[in-house]
Length: 216
Image (cartoon, rainbow, N blue to C red; front, side):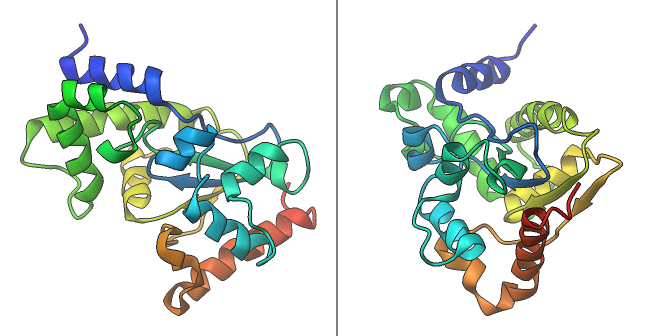
């Protein structure tokens, strides 16, 4: 029997999901937290200002189309078809990004829980049972999607503290996966900051290797 939290999770997933974005040629998977307003609007992850920041870092300052929209538009063309994006949570974890104020009001307690889990990245487990329950429901969904890719050779790039924590907790690691660690979330132009230069250079090298046909 489904718990109330499970039922609401499935309802939110059914109504507000932004689907993972990758093709059968996937080689590099970027893992993010959850969709926001622009992602809901365009039906693609990383479709807003953070996605634009990623595009400019990976493909040059002249590229203005956000990363998710760029991949969606060029889904069959290399090197874009080798790149993919997956959100840990398939629907928004902020009330401001959920496109139905009525739904938010109706499920106010659920929304408070997901917003707290989203920002509490210094702990793996919480004192609040409902926070732990939601996190495990979300992780089960995330694990299922990750596990479907476990046989592929992949470079995994969890972006930001939330994605890094949840990827670690999910415990899914394909035998031919490699991991680029400590990559920040691309919001606020983090990918251009000097303190993250080493990590971003590693990401850029992976993408350049893909473009050169060196990732198989």
